[in-house]
Length: 65
Image 1 (cartoon, rainbow, N blue to C red):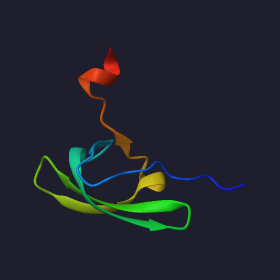
Image 2 (tube, rainbow, N blue to C red):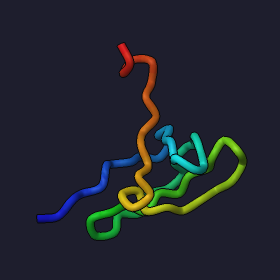
Image 3 (spheres, rainbow, N blue to C red):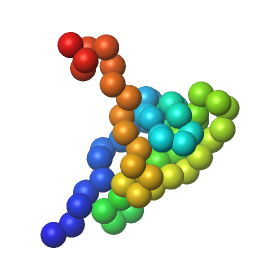
C-alpha cells in the first residue's frame, strides 16, 4: 500500500515548518510524492518534496468557519 502526497496546484498557499508561508509556482508528480516549487513570502524559492517536507496547505478564513 502506498501513501499518496496531498494534491497541490499552482497558486495554492502553503506553510512549511521552517520556511513559513508561500505560494506554489510549479508542481511535478513523482511516484508517491510531488515536487513542489514554492516562492516563500521571505523571497526564497525552494523545490521540496511535499510528503517528505510535510508541506501543508494554508487554511483560508472560509475553512476556519
